[in-house]
Image 1 (cartoon, rainbow, N blue to C red):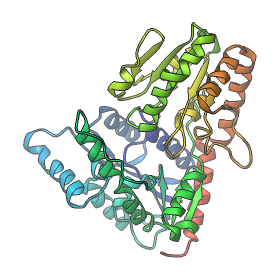
Image 2 (cartoon, helix red, strand yellow; image 1 turned 30 degrees about the vertical axis):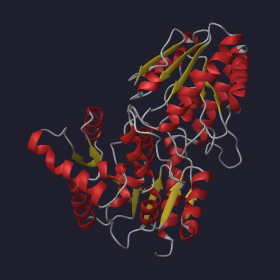
Image 3 (cartoon, one colour; image 1 turned 45 degrees about the vertical axis):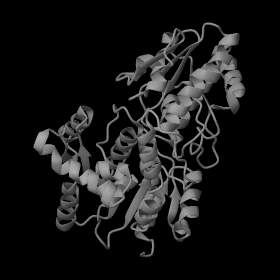
Image 4 (cartoon, rainbow, N blue to C red; image 1 turned 180 degrees about the vertical axis):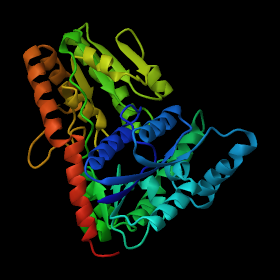
Length: 408
């Protein structure tokens, strides 16, 4: 199968965010059996440019539009596109940020010169581009933004303008999403919650939505001898609001409950771009190192990984990665969404409320055998159901379904 894969950033297993690591698993899994042509955007973040170079060096068929940091006059064309896209076309910020005209020219040239069997588009930010008619197409919706009432910020103060603009931006998503979904034969969602949200927002798409939990490139197991007594870990990219909410809840309410019975408990909150309110959590029993390039040493020290997710859609890469590393994980029902496959429930501890999460964590801290058994079962579950090979098999089924979908 010849696959055109369009992504908003380069696949990378070493990136600070979840999306490039998901894309890495997708590319690896599909490339094992199919011819994959990748169109992506890289930069100005150095890791994106390095990831693109690494893919090229590995021999992948990669076509990259490279962005550099805007400087003086050279940056004005991009600044103008961003301003026109947000103020003039009223597109969501994420779409405006990732848009590059050269990507459209690449897509047009590649689809003119090569007959692809399927076009696979990752994330609705890439849905703004035109893709060829007559080729089965599938959009992977990483997270559905749900409609809600307007939440204007209160009286003007620090950050008031930023919050007001963010609120305006949020209310552009429902219309934009419906427009994008209508351009594809099928839409893939990672969880049933997101699939139901798509169907509710656009009933005409209900029959074109498929649920398929994502996969990851399973890492080598950790050294359990490196665990430190009562060390806890939370990992999440802090540009994503649900992770900020989780960090604040964990450090502010859950950790004190744990320390009331386990005074030596210490928490590490790791993740790129922590905002001031998360940085301010740093104290004797809470470390906030920001993005940790090498997560393995940090994860090895942790006895329990906690993912207290209360809001947001999509699947939780932080939960899946911790399971793949063989760690005992405590999360919420929302944090476990999308992990069950074919009736098999993921081996982790699910609890609700600050007291429930604290109690579950304390139980695991007190029982090394239970932690070990849970971690072993979690890793085995990911290897069977969420590896790059397992995910690629699910994608192949979706691509065949897209080929058989009626037009429009």
